[in-house]
Structures are given as C-alpha cells and as structure tokens.
Length: 123
Image (cartoon, rainbow, N blue to C red; front, top):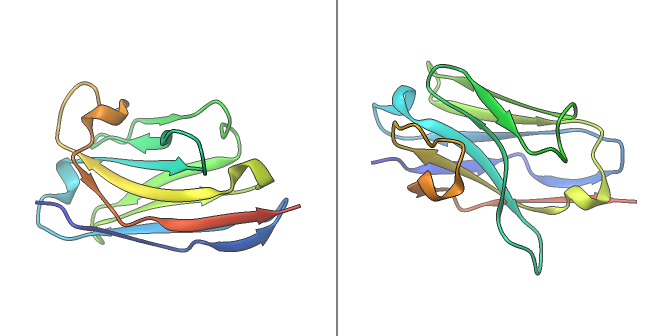
C-alpha cells in the first residue's frame, strides 16, 4: 500500500518557481510509477507529469519545457520542479502512484493519491 503526502505548494508571482515534493510510505516505492496531476476549479483533473520506475517521463503539452519531474528512490520521494509559472497553472496539485504496468501515463492507471497541495500563481 502507498500513502502519499504532498508539500511545497503556495502563492507565487507569475514567472516564479516552486518545487513540490511527494513522500511515499512503504517499502515498494521504487516499483511504482509516480505522477503529478492538477485540478483547477470547474475543470477535470489532468496529468501534469509522470515518471515510471525506469525513469521515463511524460509531460502535458502545457507544461513542457517549464516543469521537470524527478524521483529519489532512496528517500521514497517524487518531485515536481515548476518554473516560469503562469496564472493558468493555478490548481490543486496531487501526487499519485501507479502499480507497474504499460499504461503508467494514463490517469486511470493510478491507484493511490495524496491529499493535494494548492498552487496559486498571481498575475
């Protein structure tokens, strides 16, 4: 079982940066794919970035070249580095974990979710 806790959200000005962290409990962190999702008011929860157990990554088109996802298996932690933030990045950001499989880049594949952390980008 995976238990995930996000941190690092907050209020930043447009153009600023934030780094989100997701700490996972359990002894099998390294085999999970880890994803970051976000949900803005009135919108569906969407994939922002994901990284699988082999280190392959995927990003939403809207954040490519601005966000970076990484993981440190020794610390059971996943990170989302967000640069050049825009007001449209404002959302609750969720960390999620997916059991091993071929569809780690799909939202429906994720079984475990954190509580979310608010990111607000002011103009």
